[in-house]
Length: 592
Image: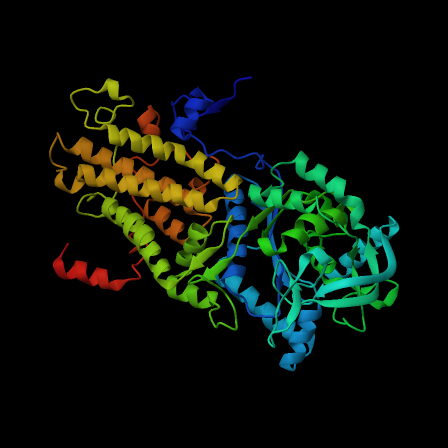
């Protein structure tokens, strides 16, 4: 059956709605597509990793949280049902590293956890992360959830107690098979065993533990990943997981002796053992939605995890296997991102190059730094941070291109009435071949209309494929194209008093303001305050900012526009002040 999209004509009296084939509707950008996972009324639960509290937060932690925040904000903008979208985050507070870090700092483990967890909570609040819940694994509700989950595994015969012997990496909190251990020169020059994947030291450990029958789940995991090609994104990470499933998959130790690890949740019915920190931590995704109470079933498996590539194996092999073992489905999606380096080097306390995200939020503004991380961060590979890069990007794309465009189109000199001017179809006919004597639109202008009309769908596609940076690239390209349109027709040279100029002057401003409205609407998940400032200046009300009904330039297609003739909103000052003031001073001095 051929699907039909309907152009929303804003409820104008006497205006008939026109049904058009979907391919033509896409061209007109009549409606931002909802995507395969965004059916109206469907629930969605996005999660960040819960962050380890052995050190203060850095920009990599904030990047994870902003990716999840942008996805959840966009989902809320797709239509009614904002209450059916959740974003969960929190802190991972058990394990040997916490125990050791607390001892080194002369603190009780819980005191260290309280201190660092508060830093994460404060950072995410300052950065505008719209979380609906912040979970700490030291909370009683989480302890109850972990104990229940353990009981489910045990009741299904998937846990056995036995002697576990192998390499253990305290930094990564995991056991490693021999194939994942190599030797590197230590401080004294002697070779020492380290993890192949992380480079962290490992030691041979032999103790009695509870063991999860992970080896039984190789084929179910393969079936899950092959049956859902979108389960893990981007695709290279899915292929990596499938490759791991071709390798050795030994049973997994899921407890440690309390003689070695006392800071954790005791195994139910066996106080001599502490539940493995990763099993404990992963269950947080269930605790956050009410597990084991019945309410959690309405949110699981409609859950999408946003994680760093360093914890992919835990989330894409151990966690789905544990879920299947407990009688639950794997998560809906696992979105994986890479890391941030600083001036080409890995962030490290020993190198002294760890970037404090709180300083960045103050220096570059909240929306500025959100935009930088999401615009420059590419999930497939590591991204590099340095201060000059931030300044150059934000000044170019937010201050000059977007802010300059808004200032031009709302300035009293060329828009003295302070309104959304009328669009003149005779000046800008819907098809170049229909041009009459009043037509002034050029081929480049039609290219602009087509580009902005297609933008909502392109942005939706990139979000659905976890490519937020590409969505922002597309928006930035269209902003440049719109600036070219305004520069090409120079409305400041036209005269409102001239019968020949006035219709075209109004049309140029109308088209530019429509482009700005689309840009502001699409930027809401990434730069919520900046987008609000832009849309408020255009006089766009809070009920007209949804993505589900986003319609671009309806007058071009012969339909009514609710904004035409409407007063603009109050002056809000610069949309985004330049960070590099040297050029601003130079421009002011020369008067250009």
